[in-house]
Length: 296
Image (tube, rainbow, N blue to C red; front, top):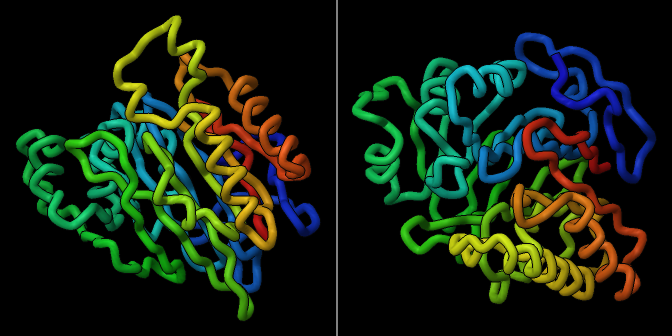
């Protein structure tokens, strides 16, 4: 079973590839010698976030926030037989939840959270359930290995009560490396910008438009990256990269204070003014999977 919409696979820097149905353990696109890296948003926004990264031998989810067991199963069961782990950026319910933990425990999928946050996870999301079968692991600021992915977590400013991380994911392929840099929730990028230099694909929050925020005020928006701030980060990253990313995907858009068109136009205009009009800009849909981006 495939997750992507009928429009199919967006292959960047190589020719198009058809996708078939999953077998019980590994999808057809991840055979030995396949594409170096694939990125797909499964859900994005305050109602739930989940991002898929996959190469020829490893399947990783970054975050998995679903509001019910039914919704989690509907979204993830096509993937779960081959998922090597779930890496949690922070403990807000739109990134990890009781319902998701139930499903992950059932399937025996390892879950990585920030070291020291295990107690917070239990208090916030266990609801008194022992979760004796949950394979809970921790990461620090040191690189962590999940399958063939080498992941460098980096701390980002977000909500003060919950340590929040972005991830620099390195995927090996035939003696080379492809890098996906993911930061789905952050309020500011100063001090974090070097992580985005020379990335092959970037998934970054573009949460709100400042003018719409004035009309539909939400105090929690101060913990999220605005469209202009996202554009400024990407322009800085491209200015300091020897080669631009094959693609950028914008995520975690506010339903009331943003739109896909507004986010894309704000970022695309800023990049075009800086000479980067050729960089493809994608927007993660809120409640359905995006087209997968294959980075060759």
